[in-house]
Amino acid sequence: MLRFAAAAALLAGATAAWADTIEEKAVLCSVCHGANGLPDFPATPIIWGQNEGYLYLELRDFQKGARKDDRMTPIAQSLAKEDLLALAAYFSTKPWPKTGAPSASKADTAVAKTAINSVVCTSCHLEEFQGDSSVPRLADQVDRYLLKTMIDFRDHARANNPGMSDLMNTVTPEQLGAMANYLAGL
Ligand code: HEC
Ligand code: HEC
Image (cartoon, rainbow, N blue to C red; front, side, top):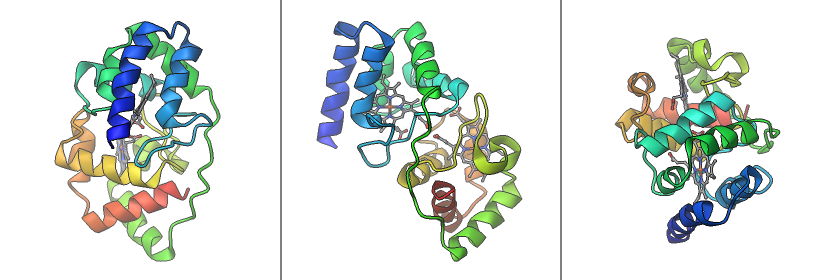
């Protein structure tokens, strides 16, 4: 965790100091989000191939403080709005890196589907959980990140979308765990 925080602090300075082009700035993101798109740290999301509008909104929310994270906040605040737009465009055109996560067990799938059908997650995240524009793709996202961020929504530690927080308060902890496994294995 220390290494993580130190990298963030270093990179926040570095992005401003010597990374001129978007490709150079994107190299710094790869320290955590992975040089081949597969994150190198636990509970860190895949951003390669994520929807462009969503990537921009998250970077903007980290910059404004609407979404908080010790690593992402200083990085987003070191960048200009044009950089956030350009980075969102850059990463959205990369191919989604397959995690190879196994499909959820039959038991987890059943528990997950009960919650997914009752909340109708697919009305926004769409069939196959690919999302669109400002709605994130969830399919094949990192298991531990999915679980962490759903818990953060539920507990309002992630408070940048009150609608998602309300929904996460309608499901049980068991359903949250099962949904993370199910979505990660799609
Ligand atoms: C020091 C590690 C680190 C670096 C460097 C880093 N990130 Fe992140 N990033 C994270 C972590 C950890 C999260 C998840 C935060 C949370 O749990 O809410 C995250 C979240 C994000 C998200 C939200 C994704 C989602 O699915 O909601 C975006 C977008 C993002 N980062 C983009 C970037 C960009 C662009 C850069 C480079 C300018 C970058 N990150 C550099 C660690 C890092
Ligand atoms: C009314 C539309 C809607 C419904 C229904 C919905 N979501 Fe979402 N969800 C969103 C939006 C919009 C976001 C992005 C919020 C933001 O701006 O940060 C999101 C974000 C998320 C994220 C964070 C993804 C990331 O990369 O950080 C997860 C996980 C998630 N939703 C899971 C679910 C699950 C599971 C369900 C059903 C139980 C569900 N959502 C139902 C609209 C919806």
